[in-house]
Image (cartoon, rainbow, N blue to C red; front, side):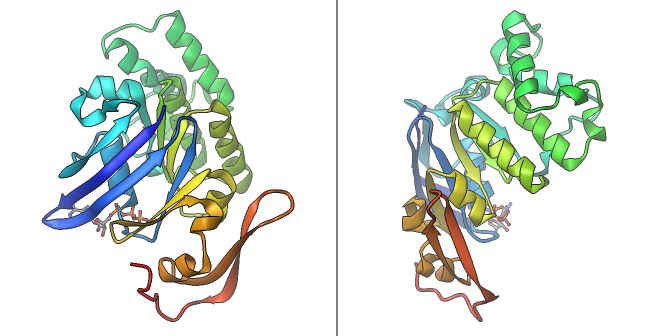
Length: 264
Ligand SMILES: Nc1ncnc2c1ncn2[C@@H]1O[C@H](COP(=O)(O)OP(=O)(O)OP(=O)(O)O)[C@@H](O)[C@H]1O
């Protein structure tokens, strides 16, 4: 289902954090949100998964403005996997944690039916965590926990998946596996990724955020230009599409002495 973020403004403690950001994702697209530390990526995601109400602007999933929906109706549309998974699922087994993804479908006091169990089992297998099913979620490694939280999000069967640095704790093979897996589900995805090589490899489109403003958006090669890489990220670098179809970046040995402010 398509995502449309329009003219999003967010103010925290009287500081403008986002200044009129637009993001579009067509149904099934994987859009990467990139930008330096503190540029507003996580704040933007919070508005999208209905955790932080924007001062102005709209977030639509399909035709629905998610800030006009109740929390449960919004959770039927959008699932989020957040940085470091610090969300208090210690004390639950892995299978119980994944089952929490079904809560929006039947309310917290409802019982899982066959459809819920099927969704949970499928997500467990898809994410390769069957062998962990009866472990305490809190006892898992960082990478294992991320897999479980992704399984919980997929069990939710969302129309939009929001990922905040999902790949933080993952080894290189697991990064590739999970990003391939997410793409294979065909779910519209908005993902914050710090690793520009991964972003270039897996995303249909990128949005570059710099100091709360979307300074570039579009296909990967149009966005990861030497000017943007220098002006926003402070590195001398270039990108190209290789014969195998993968976009790769090449960086100079040293970062630039100062980040030029030519982009804004
Ligand atoms: N409650 C708050 N009051 C004031 N400023 C805040 C508050 N919460 C966050 N900020 C600031 O908002 C800015 C954007 O933060 P955000 O976490 O969205 O950035 P980010 O792009 O996700 O960064 P990172 O890549 O480091 O995770 C930062 O400068 C942060 O310090």
